[in-house]
Image 1 (cartoon, one colour):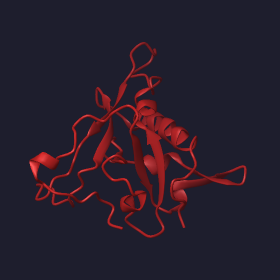
Image 2 (cartoon, rainbow, N blue to C red; image 1 turned 120 degrees about the vertical axis):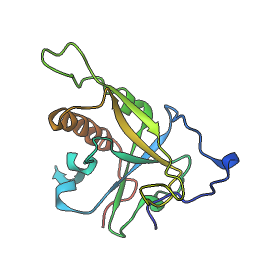
Image 3 (cartoon, helix red, strand yellow; image 1 turned 180 degrees about the vertical axis):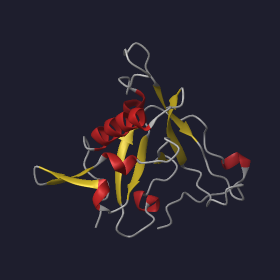
Length: 162
């Protein structure tokens, strides 16, 4: 378990930059009370499981990181999945009132290469859920997190938190 899809930096083995609609995306859910809730006796994902200070939640692409356990950082982490097409179909987040202009939700490949400037571990499966234009405030981002949590809760846990 390392939380990252470590792979070669050989350009011939670089991941595709396009995330296909049918791709399953893994989201790591730390086993913390704020990330989980119990609904009708069933443990579900809370909106805070999609928190991101840059308002661009990270996911791992299953096609490049097939074993979901490799998306875990801590032994107790859970893993949920969402499908790229379903994420892109989130169309209800308005940019401002009145609701006549809406954000477009994107799933973008953002591989983290070895020796990057941020010092992050290599993760060629890394992708981000982003918006166009970028979300200006946390109120709008909360709507995106609610939609992502709803999508994640439509599927069984890939790995339940322990």
